[in-house]
Image (cartoon, rainbow, N blue to C red; front, side, top):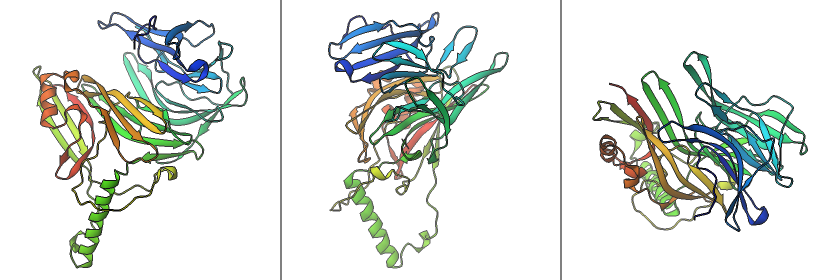
Length: 422
């Protein structure tokens, strides 16, 4: 779609959709970096895409947030709420924890002055709106300078609620959810699912040590139930045919044990994850190592949200189980939910100091939670990795984020990358 007079190109901005006016997409802020690195700046402009007429409009209103990127924006009743973000220059950087509201009726900005203790400044957090118009803030990233030319990064794992007592009166409060919480990470993606449940997908946990950089990428899903204040780990049940095969296999195992076989397996713990390591030396002498954590199939978790549980039908089928179809671990993927179906597009992952941008598209029915469906596969030619990386991916049989099997153990987390300088 070619729409004239669009906003200047940028990244790390925020966009939300509202139903008014036949559908509108509102966009605020972001950053631009030229390919040669000579130009870098943050935006503080506000744009609206009128979906009915397919036309862009820049909305000029004073009193808005300062230029920033990595912020978050959500819709609370008739307002756009912008929280956090950061601004970086050649001399310094600053992270924000302020909140601004843009009124969709008056087209006016206002800076919120909530009571209570606010979250620490951060960017890249989870911001979700509740049916009552409150806002939930989770996680994020920030860094601070501890001495000259030395910065320390922080992955936040705390949660706060910004309560709207009225359009002008807001309150911050700390929230302590129960359940299975996400592991620390940044670059995760969020969306609102059915039944007032927000979801979190993927991300990366980076650890930098002198010349060594390790990035742990994820492809897991967590649900946060706003009503119950509880986290749930989302686990796929598999297709109906797959579940029938699993039940049939379990029944055969019970018969063998009843007949006196399989006693040696009694009392044995389930197999743990296996770490697979592959090493390739690039032309420049860089040693690149990929570590993949491969876990044995496990039983169904009791931590599934009750609303996601379903009933299974039993009929024939005895085929061998196939590896699950899953998006490969990644950060900064794009998510959208429509009619209870989660759509996941793109993202990025790293091998050593090389970044790869993905363009695959997946769908997952959040009501059934059975399996991912591939709508658009990744084109290998679009990755264009170096020869060393291409050889590495081919040797691992993991080009284009396809899953593979190895001794009946399916790949569930091809997530651990690092670069070692020679």
